[in-house]
Length: 308
Image (cartoon, rainbow, N blue to C red):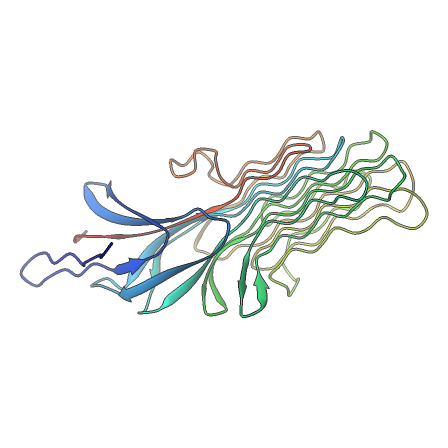
C-alpha cells in the first residue's frame, strides 16, 4: 500500500509519511490520525520517509509482564505504561522492540524463559532474564522468566523505554515464592532475597534467576525484567524448606510513566500500568499468575493527518 501525505490549507499541511506495523486511520478528538500498531513480540522497524510539518510522533506503549513461579510460586510483575506525545523524528528507520511476556516456571530444571527484546547487530536490548531452575531430585520448583521491555531505539540509542515486570520466585515444599516486581519496583522477598529494580545495573537486559545453592534443593529465583536497565534476579536464602524471592522490575524512559504492580506471593500476577486504557483493555503487560506466563507488551506510534 502506498501512503501519501495529506496536504491541507493554503500553506499546505504535510503529514508524517511512514511504514511499519499494522496501519489504521482513527479519529481522535475530532481529528484524523494515522496509527501504527506493533503487536509482534521482538524486533520491528518504523521507517520514516517524511517528517511532515510537525516533525514528531506520539508514542504509547506497554512493557511485557513477568512469568509466574511454578508450584506455589508467586505471581509475575506487571509491565509499565509509557507515553511520549512529542518524540522528535528524522527521515530514518527506528528500531522497535515489543516486549515479550516472561514464561512461567516449570519443574525442577525448567526455569521460565525471559520475554523477547530486540537484537541489533548482535547485541540484545530489553530481553527479560530467565528464571532460575530448581535443583533436580528435590521438591522445589523453578522461577518465572522476566518480561521483555518495549523500546524505541535510534540505532542503538534508547529513546523511549517501557520497563517490564519481573519473574516470580519458585516454591519450596509448598512454601510460597515471592512475587516478581512491577516495572521499576523491587520484588517480594518471601524467604529468599528479592531482586532490586534496575536502577544501577549497566545492562539493558534482565538478570537471570540464580541457580540453587549446593547445600540442598532450594528453589530458584525469578529473572529480573528487561528495561532501560535490567532488574536483578531474586535469590534463594541458602537453606532448605525456603522458597525464593521474586526478581526486580526493569526501569523506564519517557515523560509519562505509570508503573505496573508487583505480583503477590499468593500467586496473583501484577497489573500493567494504566491497564484500563482503551488501547490496552487488560490485554497487554500483565504479570502471569502462578504457573502462568506474562502478557506481552505492545507499541503504538501515531501522528495527525490534518492540522490540530
